[in-house]
Length: 184
Image (cartoon, rainbow, N blue to C red):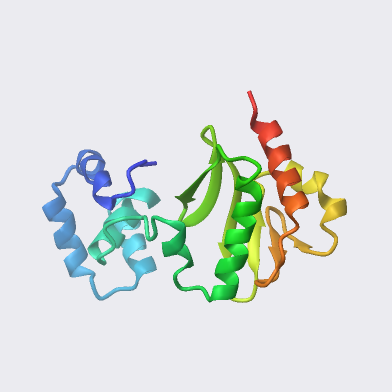
């Protein structure tokens, strides 16, 4: 997996692995420009042996998406959300970061995440009708299940209302459990 979010970072590997310069691959994409995304991916995989990652990089680049990063800051992430959702997300992160000020708020997988010493501790996703929180651990979710009975708990996430008044103690306790889990 490329760590550089720029889709063009895949180009040297594509040229080496599939034996043609990028100009050739761009010409191929021009020929199938009218096809839908899945059809373009299938074309590259079936006719040229592309991996999913290489096919995705070329197709998305050809469609005008030069980077896998869509947002770079929490404010950019929250831009499409209404003020209620923005306030809730900020309150969630503030509750945790005020207890653990060494955590950094980063954007990973185009979602806001809290990271400590290179380890993901907590993430949030804003959806239309609710907010998902993720403590990055099934074990942490299982440990806190008795305290999560008022919420919908999925395999890896906790669903809360968009106007949720954060349970500061719960958030900090889950963060502490995740920190303990990843501590060396």
